[in-house]
Image 1 (cartoon, helix red, strand yellow):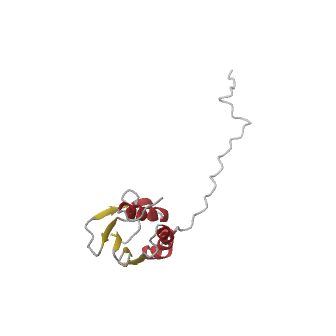
Image 2: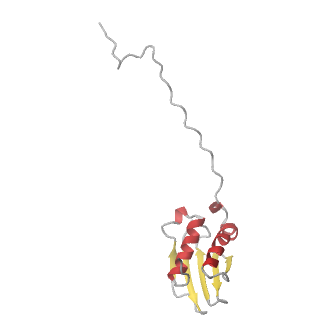
Image 3: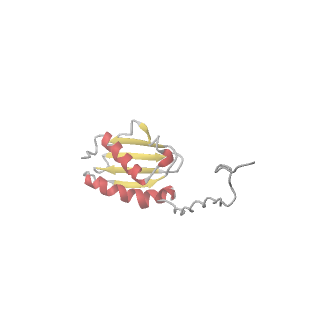
Length: 140
């Protein structure tokens, strides 16, 4: 005689199928998904300028051409360049700095570890950090 145990008893029980996972809402493109030139001029420069002004660099002239951000202040006595080597935000980048009309003596890698996850906030932070390292900007 076979006895039904709770482990083997299936008659009269309903097997519920798992509910499908709620469809995630598709996120729209981020500002970082824009073409590089558009991102730099429409988003990066407006985010960076007020922070530079707070640090006493309100006269900073910022330009973007040939996949390079150029910043100069004190009537051109100080300059920096961020070069996007592949013409994309997520590709390799370099940073250079010069003073008093001299050519940049060091070309440094820029945002190496963050290449895959570059955001507007990180770009602003890293530029300010590099300028601070040059003893140009003193952040409180």
